[in-house]
Image (tube, rainbow over all chains, first blue to last red; front, side, top):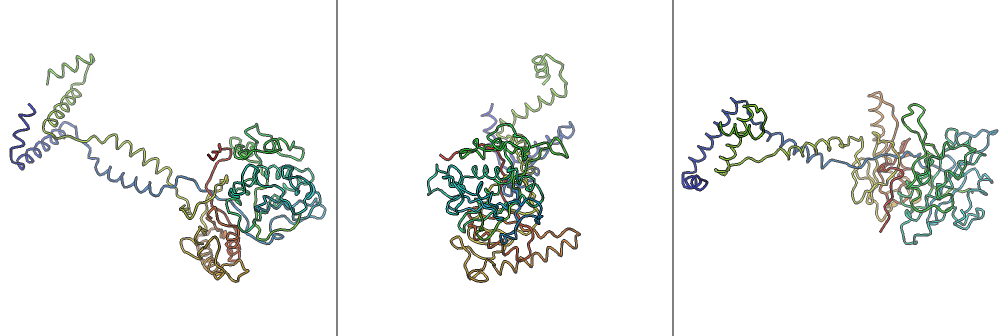
Amino acid sequence: MTEQNQAPIAEENHEAFLARRAEKRRGRAHRARHEGDTPLNLIAMIDMMTTIMFFLIFTAVLSETSTLEVTSAKAPSAAGGAPSDDNAVKVPKVTIYISSDGFRILDQTNNPDFATKFAGPIERCGGGAADGTKATICPRPDLADSEPLVSRLDYASLYNQLVKIRLEPTWFEGFGKDGNNVVMIGADQEVPFEAIVKTIDTARFFLAPDGKTAPGAPSAASDVSAFLLGDGKSPGPDALEKSKFAVKPAAADPKKTERFELFPFASLVAARPSGG
Amino acid sequence: MAENIENLAAENGDFLDPYVVKKKERRRQKAITERIEGEFELNLNAMIDMMTVLVTFLIQSFNADPITVNESADLRIAKSTSDLPLKDSVAISITKKSVMLQDDLIVPIVEGAIDPSNLQSAESSIIPLLQQKLQERLEQNSMWAKQLGRPDDRLATLIVDKDTPYKVLIQVMTTASTAGVQNIRFAATKRGQGAVVKKAP
């Protein structure tokens, strides 16, 4: 049957074939109209959707951009800190200086307690008092010197040291007052921007270490070790990234959570700060 | 046709709406005729479904941020856990090759440094051209803020390549402060805290 029908089509005049087909379509459309079987013409919609789709694909930004607030680069003495009250305990102006040697933690107020307890090299880096020659937190030992500085810096140990400073009972309350929980950050000229951002990020909030249960609200009486990564000894390279923020229900809406601030504000300094 | 209707009804064993049966039969006949005459219609339903899903997804993820961050080989921004959103402000970009104000090239960066001829003096951190253009832009923004009754926050967003040396960053930040910028924010790609870290091979 197929061959019988196709043969005449192939032989007959092409125009006659087209006319017959058009007539057939007209008839079909007529029938469809009368029988309520109208086909929907989707061509215009497909055209429009294709155009919109290409536009959206080309303009789509699939990663979300956020921002980090910092204060402008000023002289170290002018940056951060609330006006001091002579009767109040002097709160250290914590400064982190980044170089190829690692992190140096300094105090702009030259508090001797700070220098003894927190500015000297940590145990892994030799220990002892701060003498200005050794960094407080030396680079990670598991990576060669040829690796990029941003990977070699030991952010987990920096976090631990900042937690110890923040929870020191002498000045815990003082840090809680407005303007005192600022960390100043300086760096050698060649230090890449990524290291600065990672340092600011490390210093902002308390963490619940290694996926453990939240250690509760930090206070002057808090058990410091509950907040330390890697039990405070030698946190592994992933310790920081694996830990989640320590949180509490928000005062305004208990369904939401709030983080505990460590040093949430950062101020970048141009010159290498003095002090220890 | 009547036989076909009866057959279909018998096959299903249920009551069949004669209109539906008629329609099915008509479609079957149409399909046979079209097959014989070499004429067929393309079924676009699946494609339209897929396109609708795609368009809906893309519209939902369409980003209407006040500042556009166009990453390229010369501008890869750092990642941060901060969730502070982008705000309408003056955008200063520091790429591997240049410092730009909005979309205007201000000074080139060669081998990770700004040429001293583009600085106020060899020891200075001020970039005079950036300072001048920034002041003009801030004045414009102040005027607009006044007219629209908005607070003039004198905010600048720095879109910085992650490999930018600290020296260049400080030069730009010092210039911005000198030009009258009061608040500075760094643009960063948002990342979650506590994500599983991929180890390098």
